[in-house]
Every structure is written in C-alpha cells, then in structure tokens.
View (cartoon, helix red, strand yellow):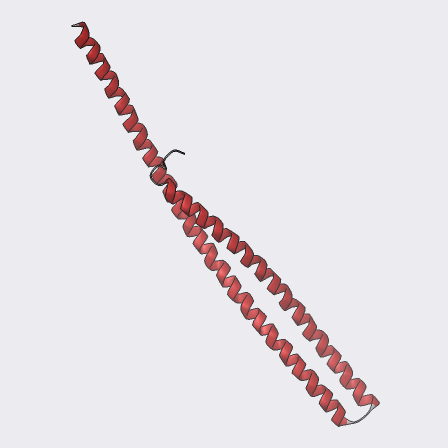
Length: 154
C-alpha cells in the first residue's frame, strides 16, 4: 500500500468518527421513537384505568352501597394511577434527554462535516502543490538533458 499523503490520515479518521456518530445517532433516534411509543401506550393505559376506576366506583356504589369498600377500592386505584403517572413522567424525561442527545450529535456531525470539507480543501491544495512540484522537476530534467545533449555534441 502506498504511503498516505498529508491530510489523508486525518480525513480517514474524521470519516470513521462521523460514521460512528451517525450509527449512534440512528440508535438514539430509534430508542427515542420506542420510548415515545411507550409513553403514548402508558397514557392510553392511564386513561383506560381512570375510566375503569370510575366505572368500578359507580358499580360498587350501586351494588353494595357500602362506602368503606368503595373508598378502599378507590384508594387502591388512585395509587395505581399515581404509579402509572410517575412511570409516564420518567419515560417523558428519558425521551427529552434522548432528544437532547440526538440534537447534540446532529451538531457534532455538522461540525465534523465542516472539518471534513476543510480537510478535503486542504487535500486538494496539497495535491495541486505536488502537481506543480512534479511539473517543475520534469521541466528541470528536460532542460538538464538538453544541456547534456548540447555538451556532448560540442
């Protein structure tokens, strides 16, 4: 394998880092979408449980008429609702954190893309300089050969 030109090693490192960040970003996006789905599902569960509680309260009131049983059932269902709401809040917080992470990674990728563009520009400049030097060397060799031909014929 040919030795790397100046800047190629950095360009390769930046490309690899960008690919890794993009993979992590994609995983974070998928995780965030999954958490959002779970949050939605939990909200639906809370709504269903609340409706169920209200239905049970009505049923217990009408069937038994005993306020103690209704109160106990109500208390138990309220505790369940509070637990579900707490879990819902935790999931929403995690989702917000993942969105922040995705945003930060998007910014990092944008920065890396800028760096990559700079490296490409520098790489083109280095190639142009090398081409100019090679052209100069070829011209000097040609002049030297012509001088040798003139010296040997003289």
